[in-house]
Amino acid sequence: MGNTDWKLGEGYENKPRPIVKLQDGKSVSKDDEKLSPSYKLGDVVYSDLNDDGVEDAAATLEYSDGNAYATFMYLWLADAQKPKQLLEPIAVERSCGDSVNKVTAVPGGIKIMETRRTMFDTDRSCAQGGTWKETRTISVEQIGKNKTWLPVQTAPKRGYGGICNEAIPGDILPFDEPYYLAPNKATKQEFAAHDQIRGISIAGNGMSTTEDSEPEGWKLYNVVEKDDSVERCIWLPVT
Image (cartoon, rainbow, N blue to C red):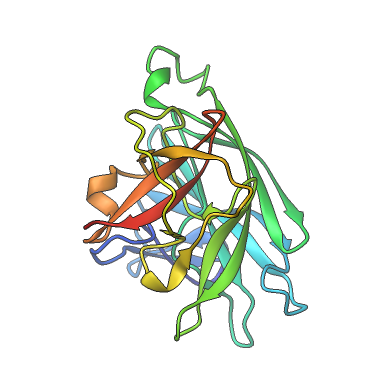
């Protein structure tokens, strides 16, 4: 991971992805000029995500440009030749934004403890940070005929494994229909019989506005539980 190419961007953007080339854990350019912004490999947590007996990784890419700072976390699956990056970032930390407090390996997954900054935290200083505490467990599953690996949230509730923001919902729409783990019809799911769902509300994704990064024909939603908690996001096709 420290000597390979990283593809950046929200997982389902329709535009081409910028590529960062790392050498010895730091970004390099073809002409050896000083890079701005610069990138480097950050913390790596290992866990066997796909139950093949080989450790995979959740790895962070640290970004800096003057006073701006961010880290982006991606999953990498072990491969016979070289690790394979999954394109959907699973967490982000940035100056005056969300923060990732702790990342640990658990059986079959990665547990992420984070604090998110929402639109209700605008009066708080950057040093104070956000107010939404969230703990998620992320694993991977193969989806569709092409058996594409995707990150999936397995706890506290099953849902989309990427980045999803805005914990406090706006308008809540009643909902109990099938949903999707990604903007892909092959990821169709049913709510579990024990799920207590109040409804859904439109979600943001934490890296850019939802409208900028959602693929055509899909929208990302928060799921609002009966107790008004928001613990997962889902995808729905736009009809």
